[in-house]
Amino acid sequence: MAELGQSSYSCNGWVTDTYTEKPGFTKLLWQTMQILGYEDYEKPLYTWKETVTEGERKCDFSIKIPSCAAHPEWPVYSMKVTGVESFSTMEVAALHALTYLCDIHQLELGDSISRYFPVPSENNPVWGCRLRTVQDPLEAAYNPTLVASVEYMGAMYNLRQKQEEEIKTLQGIMDQTKQNQF
Image 1: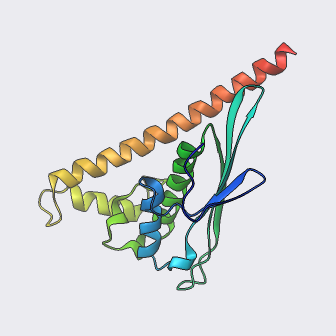
Image 2: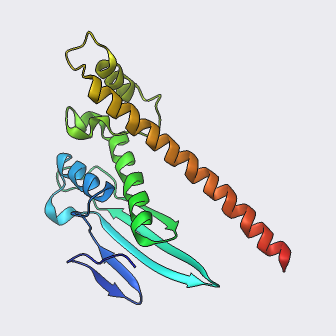
């Protein structure tokens, strides 16, 4: 089981925490939320429970990004993710939330550190403009290290998305096989 944070609490096996200082996507998500105007009392909330059923480990996980007092017109964001253990499932949930925020708030992110984080669609015009600006050697923003880093992040994000699709397909095959055995 993953380590609980200082603000964790547990009820019937469900753990709830903000994990804003945990290295990885959880911390990057919180930093991005702060750039967008979220206050300390508006941290993302992670809730999860690990179980073992018939020898199979499972982690049910949800993330909720509350409304933002600075931008009351922004919707609350929430999603559920299922994985094998809490740490990796938490990172997947935080990555999805981070990608979502970077996609819908591209203009608000402006020239912040989050502006080069991957978005769900590479066809997005704002994202495309940022990439072209960074990749063009004649632009003032050109930096070969930044170009390589942005391309690496995009490739890793795309690989992660493809692996997630493949895992879902394999899970479906396994479930079908189990049903056929009984």
